[in-house]
Amino acid sequence: MGTRSKAPVSYVGAAIITGGVAAYYISGSRAEMARRKPKVDTSLFMADFCRALEEEEDEETKFRVDRWERPQGGGGITCILQDGRVFEKAGVNISVVKGVLPPAAVQQMRARGKSLKEGELPFFAAGVSSVIHPRNPLVPTVHFNYRYFEVQEPGGTTQSWFGGGTDLTPYYLDEEDSRHFHRQLKAACDRHDPGYYAKFKKWCDDYFNITHRGERRGIGGIFFDDLEDPDPEKTFQFVTSCAESVIPSYLPLGMCCCV
Image (cartoon, rainbow, N blue to C red):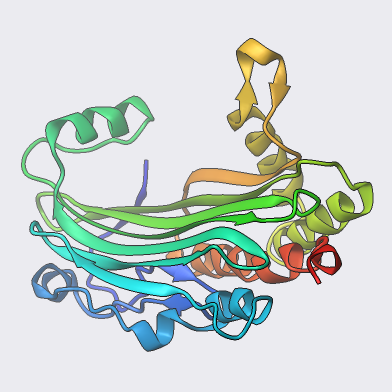
């Protein structure tokens, strides 16, 4: 079951690209949230993460920023940096959307253990995802995704949860790079719960297991879903720490090979 709340809350129901890239603080009551069209601020979006990648590139190589809107409610931003000296292609995407859950989505959530009532179920979802492909094969590819989902049920109760993770795919294994990457993720987890890293590392290993090949994708990382707490702010702070660990965990890896 998701975290349930009866009273209106002021709260970050957030699309997170932390490390400063973007944080959407959607505050106010559920009624206000249902009426409000999420606003996307490109000046916030082109902050730490995108800027950190641009700083590895030649001065003229910048992200191309496209804003999009969803007819059913909400929108987002897609940022693409392509054909750079360091990065063959880097994509950073953010979305803040709302609407009514289709029956197939309700069925899928119930199959995961969510206890959702019958009737129309408005939802709010926000997330950030990114895949970075470097040009030099000695530098690994990184992927991360962090998201928040909220369902409003008849009667005014809500369920909410977080999910996401970060994982690394080297082309040539550098053991020290691998240790550095995992140390940073562990430090982010340990600030909130000393059991998180081992739990979410195993979840990542299992999630990215390629059964027919008998191997896992890359060297893993952390992954979690349906993460909830009676205090959503506590969970948000953990997810924020995970997102903030992306820059220090990834950018030092093999970048000297790109000079």
